[in-house]
Length: 227
Image 1: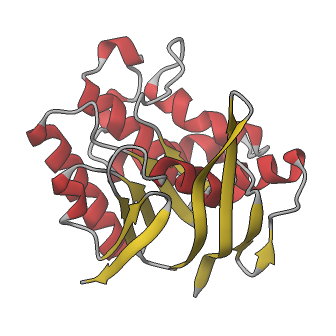
Image 2: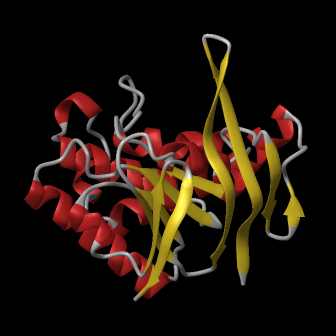
């Protein structure tokens, strides 16, 4: 089942008034259960592409379809609702709220969705168990290691069964062993729960695990490899 599709996607930024083409003519499709990685050197456009596919930014031209609906012309409010209800995000800096415990961080988006307290707590505990970190439920971010914080961030991203989980450099702030363990967990969730993952990364261990690898260069798709 198709989740995201881009058609002739372009993105142009202004740098001191000078147009800079970050992406050019991007056509790709993300399907249910995909484990896709967008790779490329610094400045190739991979973060820009991830932001467009995740409805965090709008294209200069071209179209983006989400579950068959063109979202290119949606309002800021409509895109915010789409991100809240349909997408999960994992950020490099974890973006956990410092004053909240792990379980409260996970519950936060569910609260914004208006889910009742008992259901929020149940879903959040289940997500913690899935990531093997139930014992962290009442700890705040400053009481956790980087790897533990990133697992909480993954739990937060998957708690509402999103259509797709997007991650920009998910292992960037982790040592090799911790990053590998995190990737093992996400591989297992992809295979056992059919969770769709879309990453951008230049980390070799992220790239080698991709089942679909999109390589960008100078804002264009250089190659597509399916394993």
